[in-house]
Image 1: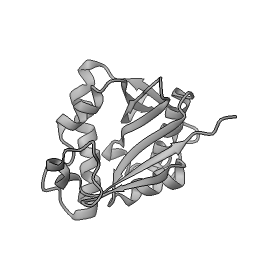
Image 2: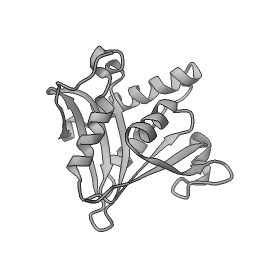
Image 3: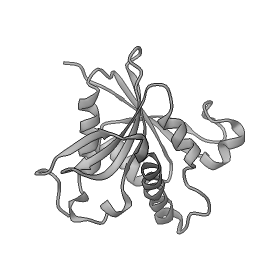
Length: 181
C-alpha cells in the first residue's frame, strides 16, 4: 500500500445539506467493521439518532475529511473551551477508501489535522468497541492515546442508560494528554 505523504488532508465543516450523506457514509464505514468481525450486521450498527445527538451536542463541530479536495471521511468533535477537555466523538474513513492504494495514512493524517485545529486542547477523549482491533491499534499505537477505562456489564458507562447497554456492552475509553512546550 502507498501512503499519502504527498497529498493534503483538510477538514471542512459540513453544511446542513450534507448531513444525511455524512450520516450514511459514517454508518456504512462502521458497518464494514462489524461485518469484518462478525460476518454480518444484524441491526443498525450506529443509529442515526446517536449520530445526530453527537452532531447536535453543545460544542459539536462536524467536518468532512478531504484528501486533495475529495471527501474521504468525516469526524465529529465536541469542544469544551472552558475545560479544554475535548472529545473525538466520531471518526471514520469512507468504506471505499480502505481498499484504495492511497488509504494508508488517511486516518493518522486526519487526526494530526484535528490536533492542529484545536491546539488549545489539554486532553482528548474517545471511545471504541472492544472488538475494533484496528481502532484500538490506531488510537494507541498511532495517535498516542491510552486506555483509561473499560466499560462492561460490571462497570457501566454512566452516560449510557442501563436499558441501552446491551447494544454497547464492551467499550474502551481512551485519553490523550497533550504535551505542552
